[in-house]
Image (cartoon, rainbow, N blue to C red):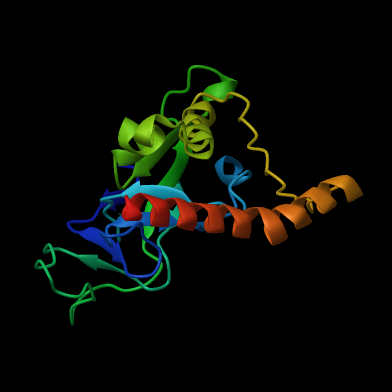
Length: 209
């Protein structure tokens, strides 16, 4: 009814994935959409996802926007790879830029009011990003992933989206006073060698006993 359908296989990516499984996708391709406005220079983990594709014959009033895509080297595989076999696309596999999340808008047939003249739907190729395995691995909350998931619900309910701040990483050089440098110098030049000599003498003395 909304012009999209999930695929039959899993999307693999031999370049953008979390080892060891090429189906544990790391998504870096996001389209221009309100939901994606904070998804810049980030990656989103999406394990075990199928592709989501527009159907051939669909309602022309449906506005379909792919939100997240797999990498250019991705492909769709309907059979699980055999253990020990290198992951690579088969001869009939679809390759490159497979859609993983799709947003759809269409006019409502019976709108409740002017605010709800459009109906909205978001189709995900995987339910894993909604689980603790992705949002809370090893007990550490993944804020980017959480905000992205929440923003889908906020967009569907016409609420203000959460902004994801970009963390600026600054590398500060080590600063030491002259006295600290002097202590470090004598520790390296005299302290460590002296400790090794004393340890050697102690071992020699114990062996003589």
